[in-house]
Amino acid sequence: MEIYKDLSNPASKEFEQLLNSQLSKNNIEEGKIIEGKINKITEKFVFLFIEGLKSEPVLDINELKSIGWADKIKIGEKISVLLERIEDKNGEVLVSASKAQKLKGWDKLVEAYEKNEPIMGKITSKCKGGCIVEHIETKSLMFLPGSQISDKPLKDISHLMNEPQKFALIKLDKVRGNACVSRREIISSFKKEDKAKIIDKYKVGDIIKGAEVKGYSSFGCFFNVNGELDVLVHLQEISYSRVNHPDEVFNIGEKHDLKVITVDKEKLQVGCSVKQLSPDPFEHIENYKLDKIYKVKVSKIMDFGAFCELEPGLTTLLHSSELSWTKKSASAKKMFKVGDEIDCVITEIDKEKRRVAISHRLTKENPFEVIEKKFPVGSIVEGEVVNKNEYSLFIKVENLEVDAFLHCNDLTYLNNGEEELNRFKKGDKLKVAILEVKVSEQKVRVGLKQTQKDPFDWFKDKKVNQTITVKIISSDNKGLIVRPEGCEMDFQIKKSQIAINAADARPSRFTGGERIDCAISDLNIEKRKVVLSIKLLEEIEKKEALDKYGAEGSGKNLPFSSLSEDLKKKKKD
Image 1: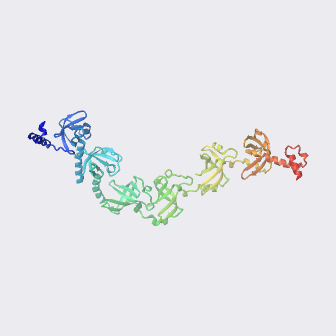
Image 2: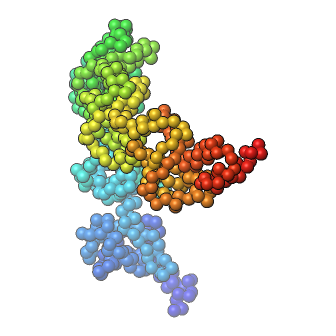
């Protein structure tokens, strides 16, 4: 042991020289890639021999399998690893095969990026926002954004998975060691040369036949020409009429002729026009007259109406409100189909705004005007129940496309209107009276009870203070329900109108079925209002008794308890 303590000893110097010469054979330095040889394999680990290290580095078998080196796991096989630590806190050597592979691959990627050369790779899996691409040569993993997969949207990329193909390196992050690639750039570079040749074939003024509508944008419509070129028709070049969006005029997949109006060989763009294929119709718009019927062709159907052509290049909107007189939510989809020729009336021409308004319903007679002329108020017409709700029926009048309104209060004079409503169902036939016609509001109101005899007419020859006989139907805390003899209607006598004396004004005095006399307190034939009162009859009879029997004694046998006092008061007066 003494030999190692004394470094000046010749033997110590010789040992130091031998050790240094041995270590110099391998460039042992942390952060460098070195080569090791497998000398032992267990179920989970691989042990390496690296000359110059004091202990054997250990690798996880799963790490080697994850980088595709499963075939290298055998005794004597040499593999490259990254020396991370010569000695950790436990005195062990730390190495990594995957990091070594990544560093080697990174150098290759940097070289390709600097030379602007494509690399070979294959898409191995999908991830959030794109895909993972494996560099075939170095097995390095790179990110492929979804927008860089192709030059057109792809719903399915299964045909691209695990297929060797070229990619362009578009971004390298040397700090993080991340690489971003593009397949779209490779495709575009090939297409760019071909596209230049295709565009050379077109010149301003050329007519393109049968271009297919490919897509929309807020500024125009894109057409595909013979499957080799996409061209733009700007919003202002679609029609001479005002267009808010291309979908008002075109449908995806439709084919239209186009006129080439611009060719940009630097930007490799071709601009086209649809409207320039025909003369400007607004130059002779005076030929069209208001309120005159014209044939128009349905070119596009929307939820809010239909776009129609008066002539090529002159497109106008037929709004859903102008489709029908009677249907408030008329649907153009149910009434027409693209290509139909229909009659319309021009309702407005605005040359400055380049707008023409049309109406389909004006070509037909207004059914509300027909009803007003043919069936004046009070007329009896036949109808059919076509719909009902919780408080009314809707009646189709005669053979006209008009749904008249019948409120439950106009169903009957006798019963409760809402209860009477339950008797009716769709399809029921009935005769109704026209009560009101409002052409401007497109409303017709009818009534059923108006076709029947009004039981209130029983009061037409009656007058206020007249005595009538009624039958008591029922009683409650509020008063009496009575029916005049010879009348079909029931009326209420309020509790306060039963008797002069409060003690006698008890509804419970009556059990029902009694016949009594009462007086008419109020009567309005027009408003169909009548008020009946027993109290009033007593007051009338009392007054008559006072007028007839002026002496005090003559009134003692009358059935009025206060008559004697009233007579004394009258004598004093």
